[in-house]
Image 1 (cartoon, rainbow, N blue to C red):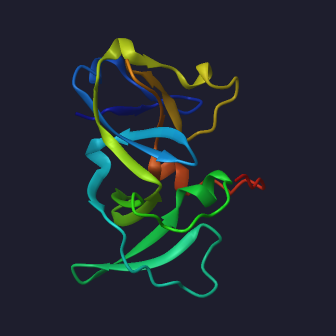
Image 2 (image 1 turned 45 degrees about the horizontal axis):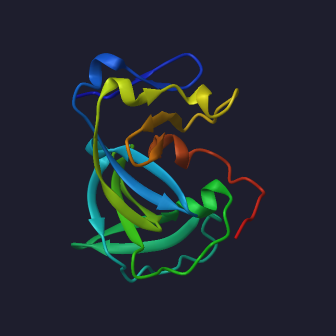
Length: 164
């Protein structure tokens, strides 16, 4: 399943690819997001992340996973939310981005959602000018998921907002 295709303005979901779409739901700052499960390599519980001096503002550090160093980034920082200490429910999503494995810190992991085409809406439902990393929204019986592209999230400049 390719799941994603480029559109002129941003990445868009193709209805023909969504017959059996699976997305991993997670939370960041009490907001619910989801990424295509095909981009998630592994989910780690809290781990010892080693800070890297003079790393970018959204870089938490590096982590050794089976002998390989993995860069760990804060989705909170990228989205402009205040950083928060890792808690018992915090997880690190390992994802393959541009041929490298990157760890994304999230507040909690919810579940894998099996989504059907009628559950999807375009990103313009959320904003007239949605960010490039928004793929759209999916509405289930229990939650609305903002679908994001982790690779595009990495290339965004961090916003200048801080919220608690």
